[in-house]
Amino acid sequence: MPKPDILQLGPYPAWDLPALEARFSLHRAFEAADTAAFVRARADRLRGIATRGEVGAGRALIDALPNLEIIAVYGVGTDAVDLDAARARGIRVTNTPGVLTKDVADFGVALMLAAARGLVGGDAWVRSGAWAARGLFPLQTRVHGKAVGILGLGRIGAEVARRCAAFDMDIAYTDLAPRDDVPDWTFVRDPVALAARSDVLFVTLTGGAATRGIVGRRVIAALGPRGLLVNIARASTVNEAALLDALESGALGGAALDVFEGEPALNPRFLALDTVLLQPHQASGTEETRKAMGRLVHDNLVAHFEGRPLPTPVI
Ligand code: 8YV
Image 1 (tube, rainbow, N blue to C red):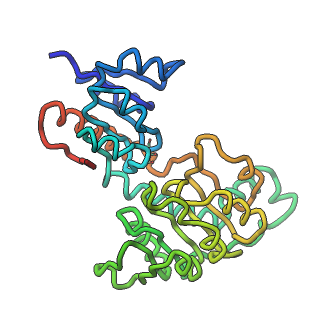
Image 2: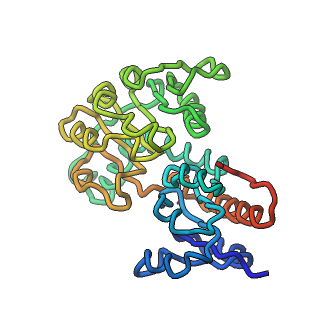
Image 3: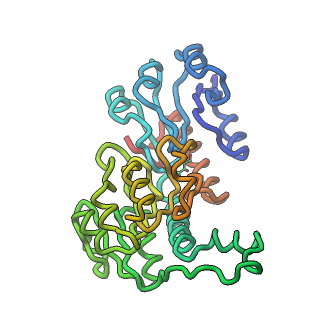
């Protein structure tokens, strides 16, 4: 049996490759000088796409592959895949939920603590000799006991909230509806009202059209000059121009961001701000989680081509 041909849209760690290459012919589009020509040259053979959460598989690519059967996403977010285009053709889509939840939540809380307590600036203060030359580091902001808002109480949002509870924080959340299994957490339907009562606002929404720009000018203004925005979801959920304006004017206290419009490039205005903590989309980036994500991509592809139920289907 010839191995199914799979278009690989982004790099995976080396440890994922032996198992994938044992079962599939991988075509590494991300190494090609001309991606479109690379895809065209093998379009009829390709039966699968293996991609990453932040790398797009849009309608044009799906339409260009007449024999496409499955798109396996290395990540939980599927907003970069055109699900309507896939659904219309009966193309299966899988992701990697569950295995990354706690790492992403850990990272979100780490961002909150690091931003509020000035960990990055403190490290630079020591390394640069400023401690000896200039004296004590400027005082920072307390975290424990403060009010936290969770925008989107899905798997990741709930794990963030659980961690914040251990810091004696007052927890509120928005979601599609109140949840009856979290009686200690306050449901606030309106994101602006949530931001107004929060010292720290976490964005843990799924990306996509339904959540685009939810963190807009009014939410940012409501969070206010002492508020901290933590985004471990998708940049599309935030109006980035409004965020930058508010940070520059001091209308927003600070932001800790793992995701950016157009990443890995980012708006250079971020670099001039000392009230932001910038991270390279690495919330799920531990060896343990990435190994589990790689296994799920492999297991979904193998299950599909063996005609078995998919371990983690989206559609
Ligand atoms: C990954 C992610 O960084 O799960 C997601 O949706 O964005 C992240 O876990 C990404 O998918 C890895 O490429």
